[in-house]
Length: 206
Picture 1 (cartoon, rainbow, N blue to C red):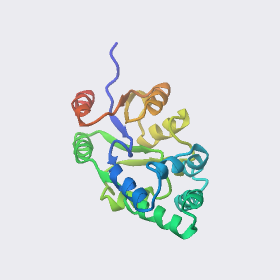
Picture 2: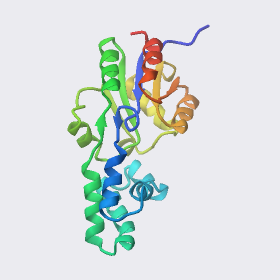
Picture 3: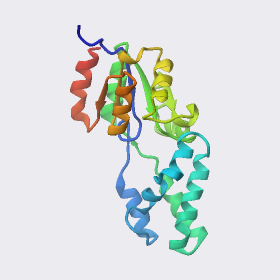
């Protein structure tokens, strides 16, 4: 017996639907005399990141903690805050190829959900990027209180899509998330760029 055809799609945000220009952070780091990559390194430290991804602290509190961690390097709390604020003003860009695919899938009768480890800033980001109304559901880890790759996250996402896991095709750019989805019973595709769209269109056959 062949695999059931997917009738819903769950796509990651950062790295799939939204992309980031690394030159922005690099420019801020150079302007403030910071070492290359330090903003991302501090922000992504798991002890600092995990609470904001599960809604225990706000995006603003998370960024305040990054500024605090930068202060010893810059010697001035105000300068550290200014560096973080300048970095955070850039909210990324929508990948037009992925957005076109999402629109095609929805027009073809496929439910599409955004499945993302995000913060309480997500709704504002979706609005700023013109994505309000482009998705059927949004499953934000900061709202549901659990993050990818936990099995519970995918259970919640499938319930939001009103579709059994075996029929929800998941797309993400991180191996851990892909493994977690498959463990939860979802077919999953590791995203590496627009070349993957041909496979996804064929898999959905909308």
